[in-house]
Length: 105
Image (cartoon, rainbow, N blue to C red; front, side, top):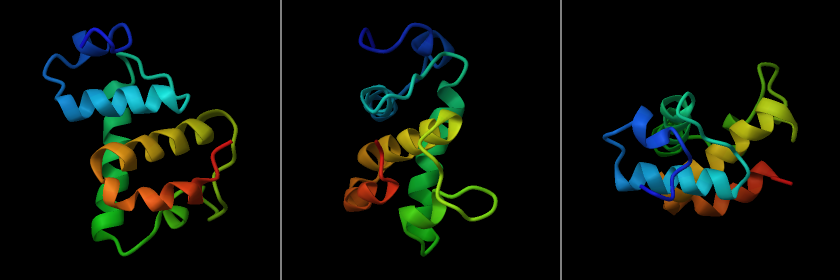
């Protein structure tokens, strides 16, 4: 817990070890996780894995904008890709070979 960013533990006092690993993985990839964002960020990671496991899609198919174009490497789109990658690494590592589809900078 002491490795987590300030505010995360107090915003999510029941954070699991797996969720804490996700937060740390997201931070390593460049996505700042805060107390305000931690719940939504974890949801992004778990939803990504749910889609991979149950949706019959691969990561490149879900990492797209509203018009179906790949998410760019800027702003919130880049952050979303970083969270997706951290989610795969943490919550569904069987799909780790797909992280390269995100083409993270």
